[in-house]
Image (cartoon, rainbow over all chains, first blue to last red; front, side):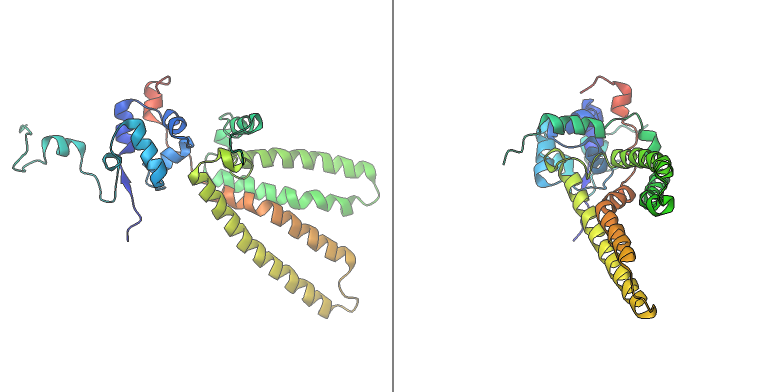
Length: 90
Length: 178
């Protein structure tokens, strides 16, 4: 069984303009722990993952996954060349 | 049990997370060097007692600077772990508690090896020498084991500590954000 948990925490944090320290304080963790999670060096407990998801008002699966995340642009506009893609050719 | 942080906890948490001396222990190499210095100072400090003999002035002249250096070094080591072994469990998060557990487990194993090595050395000395192992040697060995038992978890925690996460782009963009 893979012990790797993928996350898009840094992307969401940057998008919402939340610092590591602010997030850490809100969820009751150390700011280094947030950094370790973002770097994939630490897998948060379900409790911490849920608290982080609650802070961003997102479902936990939007932030954490056992499979690598697709790029956000692919999810919004579809992968280049895919039938449902709404991307415009350059 | 009341698990709310006390004023003491909050103060210690703030002290252990001060950023002023962060670059002193920013890299793995620097942390290893501080740990090596701490091991040397820990060994040197009790060694001044037999070295100075009955000379009280010499004892003080050697002991005071060594103790001061040892205290500074211990502070740097504690700061590099962000108080992993110094803070109470109620102010540590789940990763820190797990890391503290790993440091204690590793220290326990290393300490066991130290105990076996010292016991073997003492038994060997007992067999090889005519007069046997003296009380002074036994006391010195016990004191050395006591010091390693006390400080090994700190040394191991420092050596296991990962570098700080890279600079936070959000904080750099808007320091007041959050």
